[in-house]
Image (cartoon, rainbow, N blue to C red; front, side, top):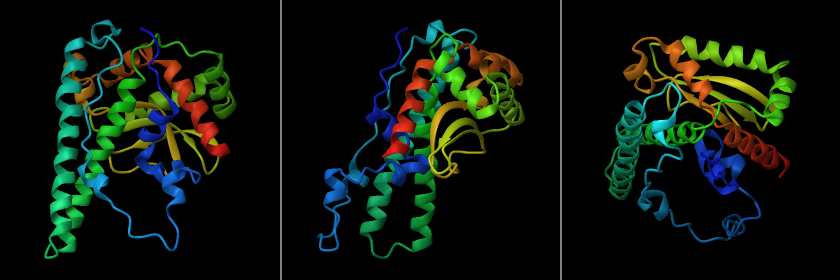
Length: 249
């Protein structure tokens, strides 16, 4: 399977979770239009632009140790369900904002759901797009992880341990590039809402039970093994290269 054509534009779009302000380019047309004398900006696209499910970038029948049945269920029910929910929440937000009688606490309940659904959509897309590979990291990633963690083995040990700690519960494991510190770090995410500040996602592993229960029951460790056998490291390398370019802006 050829590597997913993960462009800089795609990466910056996905990096919106927790890093939207960092990723905003100050030389963009939108940025140039924001001045003290600018008219009130139209936010229509924030409410009306629907999100469409992205197709799987690999053949789900060819993963090693993760079944096609599980992947299709994950994509169709969990991910696509989050997309539908996100679009619904955006419609409700538009209606609630237009109604001057909407209490702020009611509006913020919708914003909390917006945060949850948006996080689920973005993290699922990142997760699926870093699957479908051989599981063998090239020299670029090996060297980067060795520089950051002391060795590739130490990085893998911590990443796996975080995953084991989330087994039987819910959350995500994230290798991220922190634009504030310039460090590659592993992060524990308990849910879709909370994300490390100023961090662009490099490698994402779903640890919600729906990502492995159908194949492995409660044996989350076997799923983590299978995940590592299917990492698409070309995508991970492209994300890291892009993150370093973003930091240099």
